[in-house]
Image (cartoon, rainbow, N blue to C red; front, side):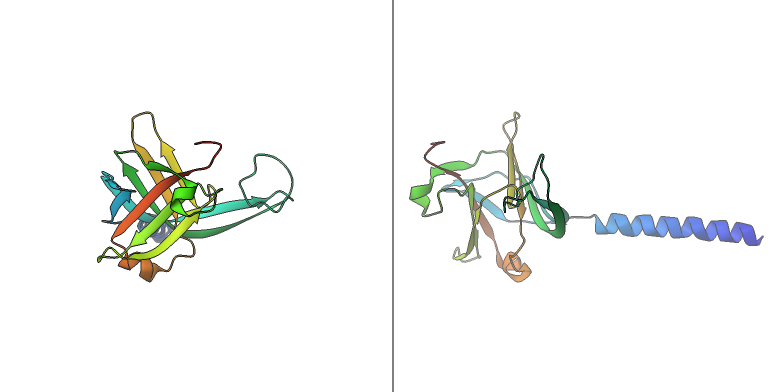
Length: 169
């Protein structure tokens, strides 16, 4: 009898730990208005989720993801805003945006009065990951590391622009 109660207790604890893991893996649905320059993006799916990020230093001082080399790795967790857009992002030359010429994307956060709260220049895949798929949809994941949660709560509109440098203009 003791054996059966012990086994049942283990099974119940297993179910409880699985359900708590599923609750932690849930994403928070958002309702931001997405734009790219002057065009409104059709975004049917958007949510914020906590994700793990891993980075590597290959001895060059760069913290880009390394495909080879030596060095050490480190990681952290942060909130990521993920979305799917049915319309492509606007591309603009960096001089017209007043951004750094090696910036890949410019992201601007606006409040409900359409006033700029914060802008972020994204330089690498740890800041932003945009995939323009063959089904003519754009899938994006923005790392919100360093952006206060209170600012994210005040945001109503997000502007994302793909920045072109001189060589890929």
